[in-house]
Image (cartoon, rainbow, N blue to C red; front, side, top):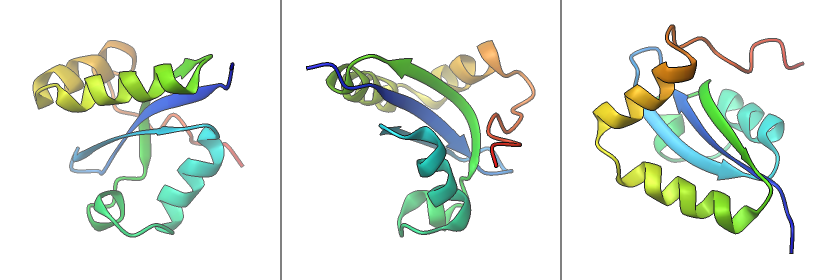
Length: 95
């Protein structure tokens, strides 16, 4: 069954990285920014969207999230900087 999803990376200003997956990127980013869910991203203030990818299939997005989470930090940084070298918040201006 086709169900779209996003793999995303949020970071703190100190570049602490959190990798996640969601079916609603805008809603999930709002949760990160407001600190709604307790856990790693809230504790380390990871609320700046620095990378995301779209997938037509949720299970494919989950597999990609797991793949990225296994990577060393340097490889994650390379992925982010390949599309966002200045680590800008890609969700800026999303209402």
